[in-house]
Image 1 (cartoon, one colour):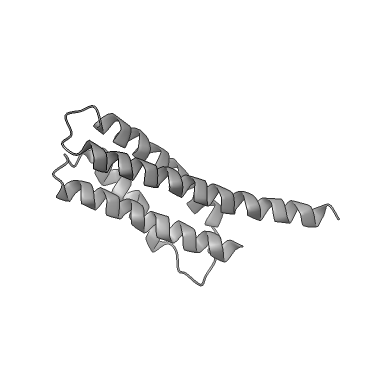
Image 2 (cartoon, one colour):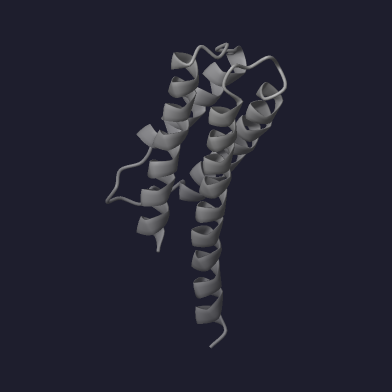
Length: 120
């Protein structure tokens, strides 16, 4: 189960910082907040190797959740701040919400299976 979480977390981290790069290409103002979020997602990605489960996997999942929540809030505010490509921003928001749902379901499944083993 942990390998699935690592694979998903790596995928969504890369996807997230690539979204930030896409926003820059579209000419969206590259704020300090976006720069910070880019670094957070990139750091999570670089902390993961596909076939290895890091000791700090829970911390990396929490870091992704915090960064993702901040990214979605920032994207939501960008829709109303004279941004040229609202449709693209809305698609990125949907993708980031899908990332949360995907990781939440994997993470919750991990703890449900561990809990069921303890309740035999």
